[in-house]
Image (tube, rainbow, N blue to C red; front, side, top):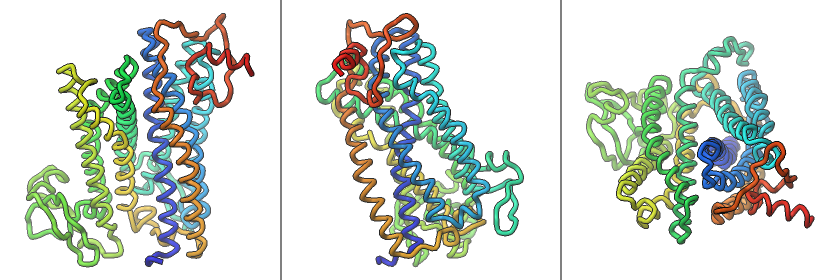
Length: 480
């Protein structure tokens, strides 16, 4: 069907599940740190706006965290079901790294998550803030181990191959492989930027509907400061990441650039737009800027970038896909920087919260960070092809021996279940966003602690629409 084989369906299935999954950890990473900042500001300033925002976003964090855990379990099983040969070959490296992630990050998050979500009226302020910080640190530790495993597949080192299996010889070299630092910083920063635009978009939506209060304004202000500062930093990190990729995966860079051959000693142009044709081995309709390719990728005006024709056809990534996925990522990155600069200009003119054109821009930029993350992962993973472990094991040799029919049925089942299950979860999360933060102006809220009233929490109260109001929860408890 459509010229696809069982291997293609296995790749599509993994791409589909990981694309769903990556959205949740990205927001979890950003929201966890955002919540820690909000609670810290509340403790320092006693401004109830930060408290109200904390309660509001903690509900969304709880739903998002749950969906991230569920979607992540499916991916772990796929290594054994669809990619058993890869697991047999490299499991001695990837298995321990994922185990370390569970033993450190997941246990840390699980240990403090209950206190963070349900302990507001049950523990002291210091312990609750400590729990929030520990959950935030846990999400970053999880990112550390996941990126270490994936980066090793991109730039493997610290091993030897014995009887067709990878045997670790230097764990520090495995973890801190050449691409790991750049990819870790790139992903963590992307999560912060994506969360900033998610928060900013929700604030813009409320302001456009006439809901204007200190909490909504604080949401937009903090989000735009984050965009203004972090989006340009992400561009710099991306530049360093590109130089590292050029050194260790030159074929990937050639595919990203749609660059097929060098001419004499001429500098490499930058192809802004075009259509790389893998069969004809050229980029059609190319719009080029002379010298710029060399300047960006080598930081010189005379060095050349490796070309696709320098690699055997069987070793070339699919340039048609990664050429455009990379440009989607970069294009959205420039729009994020532009949005941050616009916010600064409007802030100085005292019209950040009233400029409807800007609010619409912020609204529509809401999913931009998540789309950029997906585009970046497509570029990274498809650009690694045809290798599952770069230079060591081809993707075609890594899959399990399943039939086309088996893979078709399971893929269809995944699509149906994922859209039903996570579609409902996302719908519920967006409903919470639309309600906006609940403010209790002039009303004292129980902060918990020794000697103060303690209210039992129901399991789902982390996402309760009235979860921030201790008195309301007390009345519900009495009624039950």
